[in-house]
Image (cartoon, rainbow, N blue to C red; front, side):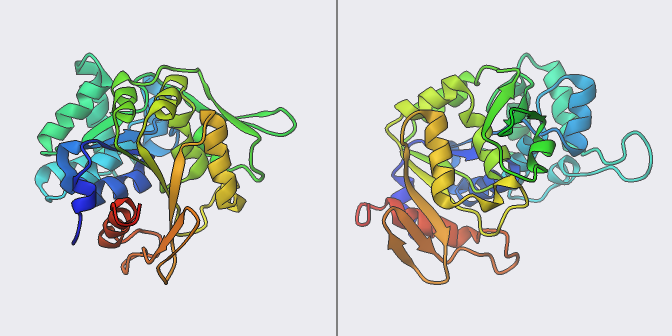
Length: 299
């Protein structure tokens, strides 16, 4: 595989939520410490939501997912980190990795320190940084002015919102701002547009850092129609949303799936679907597609 075009970057930053971002981080994990993941922390569903309700913590689920996908070597540690309790007790449905991160957060000074402890434990070189270390919720504003509170409710909206916000407005992690400001390459997505890609961009300091960055910015499109109110967004609408929030045009290219390889304007089409799951990007194909986009011969 020809990854030289990616290896020449000193700082690659990927932004998003758990599943899509985790796939990208796992795909590019050969970059080691040159790769950084900025993870959305607004999830309020499942085990994460229950912990947030009772512990006033950040959303750990997407961080755990990214760390799990980066831990390429199966071990007792990775099995424990992904273990989910069954039965009908108070622990039922909780993910042990979320509980471990919560416990470490209470032992450490900062949530980022808890993440770094797990990185060391699972031997992960890639940096994983929460978008903020303060609890916050995603809020959608409907055309009539009503507010839809919480990520799970935003995902369940029938019609797409007019705008998004964070409540309370929190401060972006300084390491996340520094990483994107110093980045050579920034990758957005794939993932749920409103609830995975957009939340970090809603942080003023992080948005300003991305707007100031000289990095090439690539948006990776989803392979399948996402089950949310943004499902009917065209690619152009999603790009416009990003640019409107950031206040400046930053997305240079879009990587999208097609059975045939071709390019139309700034949209690059490549075969990207995994043979094992139609909703997952094939790691080899994704890495090769990204390398082809940023190579000097095609840029």
